[in-house]
Amino acid sequence: MSKHGNDRLQGTLDLLVLKTLAARGTMHGYAITLHIGKISEEILRVEEGSLYPALHRMTQSGWLRAEWGASENNRRARYYSITAAGRKQLAEEEKNWEQLTGAVARVLRFA
Image: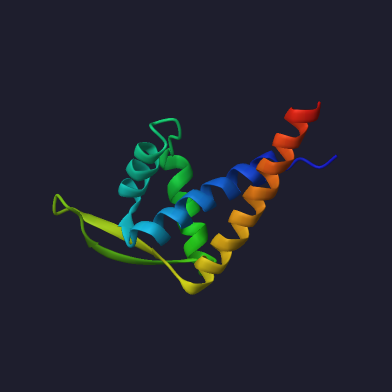
């Protein structure tokens, strides 16, 4: 049996970040964490130690574009936006999420 827990969690973080940027446009990392927390009613908390490596990895993969700019409080911040490749990846992540949640629902319903 293969272990895929971390892959699934990483994929879930990718899905949340990509969906946030697709819906909200360009954002800096802290704003992404605030948005995910707010929309999830603070159930989902994205820690900096998980977010910034994920943002870097997604940028290296070509799913995100990163540029330096000034934040709302005039601090230097890195802003991220989704690319065409990121939108394609988002569609794939959404499909995978639907398959996963559907499978879990079937097991819970018929176990």
